[in-house]
Image (tube, rainbow, N blue to C red):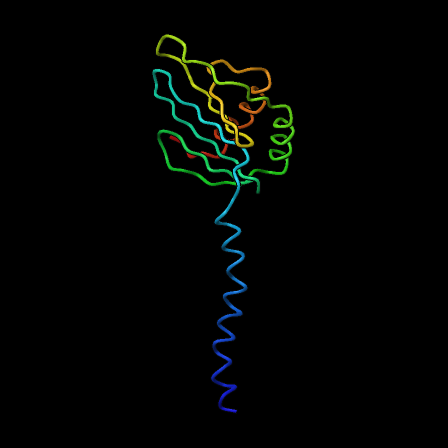
Length: 139
């Protein structure tokens, strides 16, 4: 009987580890769905919106803290619908001058930078900018 008492605590500890380990692993390895970076202009714009496959986002601006939020069902549906039509294409070369905003999109392992928004980028960028304004902390 004494042997069974000694064997129970290690078994209990293993069962606790088995229950908590997958949950921690799932949150640690989120997969990026789409990322928008807006940089440039005279004001020194530097915004970032990263949306993960679980519908949650990481938002940051040049000023202010990094914010983590999850999209509403309507925002998530709308974004996925817009992404179906997105065509990244090739990056544009930097235009001459100083007051240009660079839009960098990453989606499905591809990245591109544009200074003018193509028609397929406009709905995606618009939705991501709305999320940034809605959820990021005021300056």
